[in-house]
Length: 329
Image (cartoon, rainbow, N blue to C red; front, side):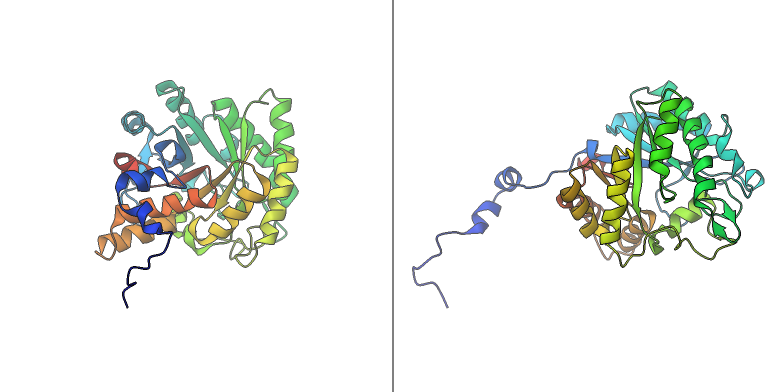
């Protein structure tokens, strides 16, 4: 029935009627400076194309100058590097991670020579380097926490010496943030950031990423559930965060992103520490696949999902769509 002249005093639609007022009262905002672009680094023997990640490729060192030019032009200010280690260099201990001339260290030095101001975040975990695909050393049929940390310290120092601005341990070993912090400090790298993957769930959404870096098949242990978080748990995630902050983490990452927006919100608002969300490969691939089939508007879906991270409290987002979204932002 019509209101017959009796209207509500408050009409929230008045704040939605024009673009200028919608922008004026927007509670969250998204800019290019919020986005971090993950980059896969390859050798000549690895293909550039990644079937499971449309629009994403692996880059050889000689291809990086053109990519960095594109990143600079777009206005992206930070990247995250992930190496694709050739099978011939993988060992049970992942010793390639400690070599100062390994692929990721070469990439760091090259990128810093091209743009010293571009922020470089590097992954600290052994899974790209081990022949079994796990993030740590397997001893007596389990991932050995403390022996793995010894390796991670050397890996972190190796990357810091190459010029990484931020070290991002993604291995989920207990106590590794504090040990790595002290190790870096003792070697003169007390200004190197530690961005902890404090919350990394044992998720099915990592599939395309694992394919991209060549660790689709795990050996020794069937999965990573003994060290990555149970998707059923949120309170445990807060305990992980509290420990990593106490141990010296400068920032945190929640991974995956969209399936765990509740965790992003709780972490950001409980601890008031800079928190990043990772829109992981499975999230990206799902949106791309739906868009390619004509089921959704791809770019609008990406923008909406990225804004959701900011609304939840994330100060930044690692996302494979960063370059794609640059014209919109």
